[in-house]
Image (cartoon, rainbow, N blue to C red):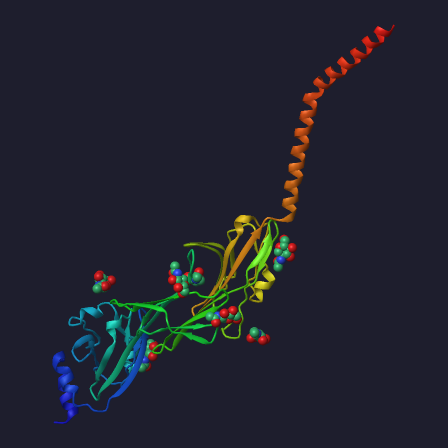
Length: 382
Ligand SMILES: *[C@@H]1O[C@H](CO)[C@@H](O)[C@H](O)[C@H]1NC(C)=O
Ligand SMILES: *[C@@H]1O[C@H](CO)[C@@H](O)[C@H](O)[C@H]1NC(C)=O
Ligand SMILES: *[C@@H]1O[C@H](CO)[C@@H](O)[C@H](O)[C@H]1NC(C)=O
Ligand SMILES: *[C@@H]1O[C@H](CO)[C@@H](O)[C@H](O)[C@H]1NC(C)=O
Ligand SMILES: *[C@@H]1O[C@H](CO)[C@@H](O)[C@H](O)[C@H]1NC(C)=O
Ligand SMILES: *[C@@H]1O[C@H](CO)[C@@H](O)[C@H](O)[C@H]1NC(C)=O
Ligand SMILES: *[C@@H]1O[C@H](CO)[C@@H](O)[C@H](O)[C@H]1NC(C)=O
């Protein structure tokens, strides 16, 4: 009996799936592909074969788990591993073209492994191996926390495979001592690194790389010189997106906020995708023309003493976060001071005037007495 006859008998009898891979086991000519998927996203595990009648497709994971079976023109999922329930499908309309690829949805990290695609037709049989790797790169953020004495920067991400967060100071110097935490869970690990800010004018950078997904992210923080303004004046704080290191065609979000110990309040934000501008502070203004040139410098008018504090410009996309911080000191203006002096002089004047008015009757009476004295004096003479 030739192998083909054996196969056709096998196919006609409908496979007992456990014996299926044993039947294919002597197949040596296999091609192996590495497929990289993303956590929580969908992926196609490729498998192709030379089309023919009576197609059997059987996808298996790690040699034992049934992932998806198809024969006699339809799916047979009775023996499917419950981990794959509702997450697999074949491209039914493509099967007759020799396409046995499997769509696998909502990837989890435990989906990683070796998948084997067994396909048999009346004339041929084949075996494809797909090695699935799953990576995650979720929610990278750089946070700035102002505390009473020291301020700190926190970079964090949910990532798989776990990796390090690299810090640099003043663009070049690597920072070795940082406080790194890793929380491993069922999903991707949560990694967080905290760095105290030392020196008043330094800049810091944190970088995270996922070598599996070939994805990188970077956070940059810089403090600008302190600014001094008088009350009721205005201040312009500059914040620009320099295009040399960032792809300009990427969506980003710009936020200006006021940072206080423990909290921060958003003054305004801009979304590049919709070009939407939301302004929460009536004294804040943005120059629309400059925005089209990626210049997000802001203007805050009619300053008051309570506007003293830190201001943060945050430009963020999926690839980077750029933070620029300013410290603003609003002082009592000269104009206001002279106004106070004027007010003081007015009060003194008023007090004097009142004093004078009140003392008029007394003066009058004294004058009268003196006049009477004179009169009587004259009278005495006459
Ligand atoms: C199978 O068909 C799907 C849907 O058209 C396609 O995305 C996939 O690349 C095909 N796979 C192969 C191996 O041809
Ligand atoms: C699969 O889908 C069916 C129908 O939508 C639903 O009733 C069932 O609960 C789902 N099972 C799982 C494990 O999600
Ligand atoms: C900067 O903006 C991004 C996106 O809106 C946000 O996730 C991040 O927390 C912000 N960072 C700071 C320090 O405000
Ligand atoms: C502030 O930072 C300095 C230098 O890193 C450190 O010696 C000091 O203990 C820090 N203070 C607080 C309150 O964290
Ligand atoms: C970083 O550079 C700034 C000026 O460019 C300097 O004032 C500061 O001291 C430097 N920081 C450190 C820690 O070297
Ligand atoms: C930014 O991009 C424009 C146009 O692509 C280019 O002319 C300009 O030199 C770039 N600026 C920087 C600082 O790279
Ligand atoms: C900021 O506002 C002041 C007062 O309205 C104005 O004189 C100044 O030109 C503005 N500056 C910018 C850069 O828009």
